[in-house]
Image 1 (cartoon, rainbow, N blue to C red):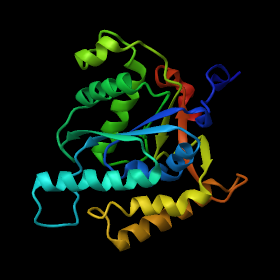
Image 2 (image 1 turned 135 degrees about the horizontal axis):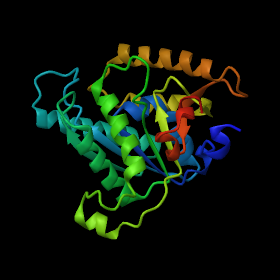
Image 3 (image 1 turned 45 degrees about the vertical axis):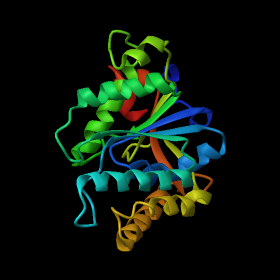
Image 4 (image 1 turned 135 degrees about the vertical axis):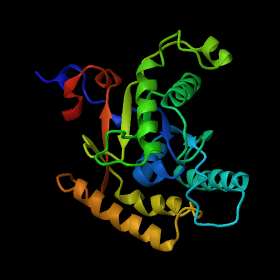
Length: 252
């Protein structure tokens, strides 16, 4: 008997409400935009929570930090409207700055308690050779939030905590992962996905977007080699119980 026989991989098709927590406004669009479109089309409520203000990596010059933050939020709304995102939330931690996993974790717990998602998506903090600390810290904060959100004595916002009734999250979904255990058929959504990604004009010029798309098509076509479709987005999907003291989580 395997660990996944006792704690099976959650079925993404059963997701009714998804909270996507990302380090920057474009991360989920690029890594999982096709899947967001697929889920939204099937009635899933999708919410975005973005950790940083993403004000550092601009291609545009001569803008104040306040204006850079405003532009990023508007670009994210534009992209999210294409993908079917229901609502957006921002923590505005400093992009590539000195923010703590602990504070981010408690903020994520607050939004979990507010929105009560049955699935949570984030970037995989265990991605091989990931050097961007925003990604690593975001993924760790979300992973910890998912397993600790029901702990009543962890305090976030008084109003939110007072109304909260503990419940179990069905699954955590890691994008940008080197160990996918689920591949979602997103072939018919890839053009719309990149229409959404192209809304992030302050971050990517046409050459950047072209490189991202070429890599995406090569990578996601390879993921689909053993599937009955030609292009798919890969994820590591786990029951939250696998995130603590279960050595088999790596190979689930």
